[in-house]
Length: 172
Image 1 (cartoon, rainbow, N blue to C red):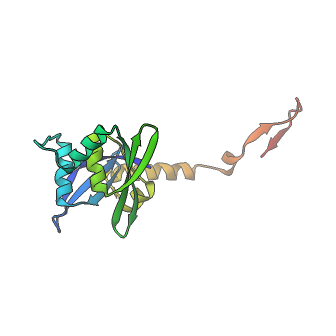
Image 2: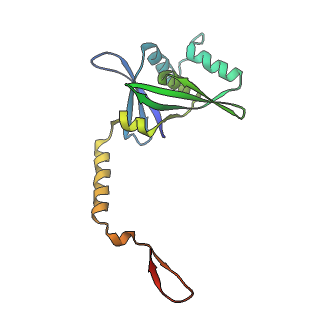
Image 3: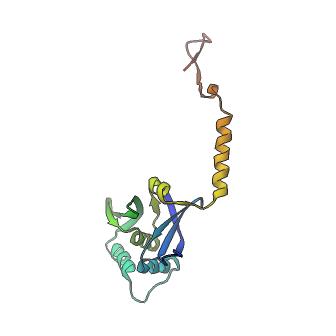
């Protein structure tokens, strides 16, 4: 799993649909997730630390969790199927851990309000992310190519000494 942070909300140029953009810690990959208008507003208000005069849905949920001493351990975006992302809330109540199915947008809105980490399965990142730093990606690929081109079969042979003072060297 890869921990990601909310980079912000954007609008799709063609459809004008809101997109929440997640980024990995190294700012190398971004994961765009299309969301609804209401969820976008909720995420923006959490990012801007806005407190409504009366609790809105996600604020109410946080209040309920706090009242019953339940903490949001983390959220996990675990699957991408038919262009739909799936997430779970990992809740803790004392020693008990529970997993609750959630839309990623709702899970992200709750994670932001509770300062809980956002995790994404590596397969989802591999399937749906977009590169942010192409130059760093290319530099990493070039360094790996240099490493591979300079390696020899002898580099993989492990040498160990066996026996009691025989000095005999065995290859394994």
